[in-house]
Structures are given as structure tokens and as C-alpha cells.
Image (cartoon, rainbow, N blue to C red):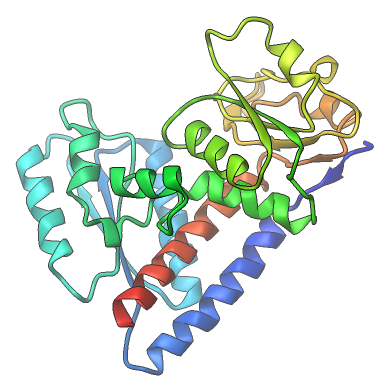
Length: 283
């Protein structure tokens, strides 16, 4: 393998240690940063995600509460509970695990969270702040990707970045964050003609579509920086990303693994957002 690995697990440990120090500083002032996580239904992947988020929080000293509800929970009840937590000064961050059962309007649920407690960074106020370059909570996955790029000292100014995927959760905010660092950004998606033509010209590629092998070695410029956001299963049932890791790692300059890459950093940036919410409330 020629590419250098960007170790998300190691970087996440460093971030958690920094958060733990900030948590301790608030605790000395009698303030315990607190995160509430909602899990509606019994989606197996969501159960794993929220369990890891709560465990990460507790490792840093953050108080994390998981509220579980049946899939048939009426929307009015969920919104009422969120509003109650909005008004609770002891709670600094609120996260609703997605996806939600189909009868629930996910956007309406997200918009009910107070912007100052929107630690997932999905509220329209958070999206607007990112759009215009104002301070605000950044969506955790692209935020983690940016920290990984920063960790290797990679300068984005003037570089050509290709983002594969245009979701509100990863693709669009990722493009905006790259633009904020003066990269030239191309966003590719399901209607893009000749994806490989775009990726072969890229210095940085972020693959975030949830499709195995969407990026292969012949689509990558030698020495490129590859960020793999995907989380899929291969034919043997093993976790894999959107990138053909075996092939692309022979061409790229840097690459993130799956697992152990973007995933741990996504959870780490949730902790950063939560401690920032608590610090802002305490100021």
C-alpha cells in the first residue's frame, strides 16, 4: 500500500481527551454538560450508533441520557418532549437519531430542536450559518472529515475537491466546508455524467453515497487524498466503505479506512458540539 492511513480512532481519542478537559473545567464551576439522545423504533444500526454515542460521552464526563420510544410513537408526543428539553437549562444538547419511522416528519422534528441545542448541526439555522460563514454547529460527519484533513497538515487552498454525494447530512455541508477553506469544489451525484472524469482531476475526493466501490483505482489521480464516508457490507458481511480500498490505496497519497476512519470522528465531533453548547450556555 502506498497511501498513508488517516487513523480516525487515534484522532478521535485525542479529540475526546480535549473534550474531557473542557468538561472538567465546567464541572469545577458546578456545571455538568448534558446530552439527550432520542431513539425511536428498533433499527439495529441506530441502536449501535446511539450506544456508541452514549459510551463516548460518558468517557469524557459528559452526562448522556438515552430516551427510547416505540416505533409507533405519535409525532405530537415526540415534539412535546423535545420542547420540554428545549426549556430545560440542565440539557445542553439534543440529538434525534435518524432515520425515524416513516410516519414521523424528520425535518419537522429537527426544526423543533432549539438551534442552541442542535448538536447534530441539522437545524436550518445551523445550515444557514454554515452557508454564510457564521459560527454555528457543523454536521458531525463532514466536521470530522475536515478535522482529519487538518490532522495531516494538508492545505486545501487552491486544491480541487470532488464530493460524491449531495445529502443534507454529508455532501452539501462537506462542499461548503471545503469551500470555506478555499478549495475549488465539484459536487457529483446520481445524475452526474462520467463521474471518473471529475474524480481523475481531483486532489481531494470525499465519497459519501453509501454504495460499494463507487470509487476505484482507475478513477483516482496518483497522490490524491481520499476520505471514505461510506458504511456498507461486502459479500462476506464485513464492513466496508464506498471506496475500493485495496485498489485505491495503491494509488492515493492518503486514505481513510472503514471501519476506523470517519465513523469514530463523527462521534467525536458530536462531543465537541455538545461541549461548545454547554460552554455557550454557561457564558
